[in-house]
Length: 398
Image (tube, rainbow, N blue to C red; front, top):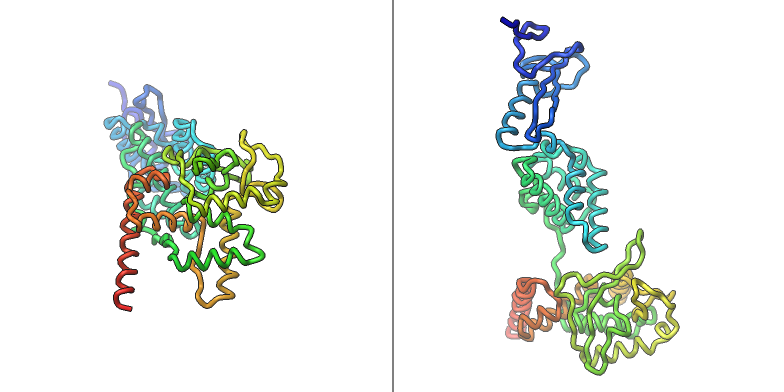
């Protein structure tokens, strides 16, 4: 009869178990893929003490229980040890044919993961509390709530893939973000008609900011996204049909420079009718010295951009955001009836709200705005109706 193998304490070792000369225990097994794997521990059972100077760990028998459970459930015991960064990279490989802006966003998130301790953790060790603590750390770093929400959604999708691949059982990112960190996103309020008039009057007569008057008028009267406005070329304007053809957007990144992309969604491909105000504003742009003396710039086969900076290069969304911030600061210093914070998106939102208040058909408004989902448009209708009701009540009681 064969003598049973024992450890240095005389305890009987099970099949696959062994003890090395340095005292560490080893368990050898074959995973679901038929590959031989090894796990180690300084303890055979949970009550053992770890040798002095060694880090505490799960006992070998505890690890064996996890392995047997994984094998029974079909979990890939080797694959579950990939890191969060490796999992995210794997997800990106599966969807490689994406827009350049999406590639840039992926680079941002990968950098965030690489700089945070979460990125190096094996995916099977990431718990719900780890995911929540990650969100809190991102908030403390000054990342906006909306950005954290987008990152969380992406990571949830990554871990869902890991579940489908039988690498893990649960998704640690299945939690409600607003219950962990405060949603401090500023509400998107449309300008009142009176605020719009004051803004346009100030810009039109201010020596510093009057050069941006036409762009602001067009944003307020078309609902264009700022990247769509920046991407407009002379070929996109059809004065005969009084239509703006929206087929692309102009973006800029410090690493890749200017680049052209299709609109944000498929619904972004659209023709926008021009009012007389918009037609006049566009003609003023085309007749301006800045456009006449523009630089010959070719960006992804597009040229003759309408909206240019002082050096003759196309304006960008960031440029207009900075312009509006400084413009409002200047206005509010000189006027008691101050203006609220205004961004290019506020101008777009104002246009949409105006049309909603005039009861334009929701599907028509969805088309003009380039919304991918009618629910986005209908939410704006609800907001517009509330604001309209407030105005009516004020008129009745005044």
